[in-house]
Amino acid sequence: MTYTCSDYRLEMVLLGIQRRLYEEELPEDEKERLLKEIQKIEAEMEM
Image (cartoon, rainbow, N blue to C red):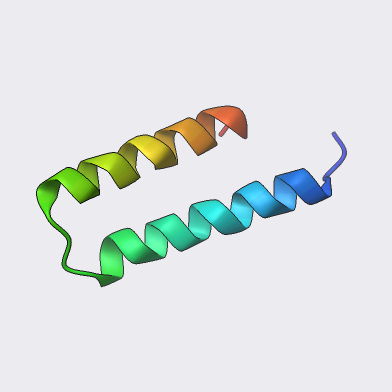
């Protein structure tokens, strides 16, 4: 499998979301939204 710029971009977006999720005090609805976004990206990356 080739590692492309798009793959790298998705990986960086995923890391940013994960960092935000665990470093900040967020309301529950925001945490749920971020978790759903993480699941969406992981599915797209086939993780």
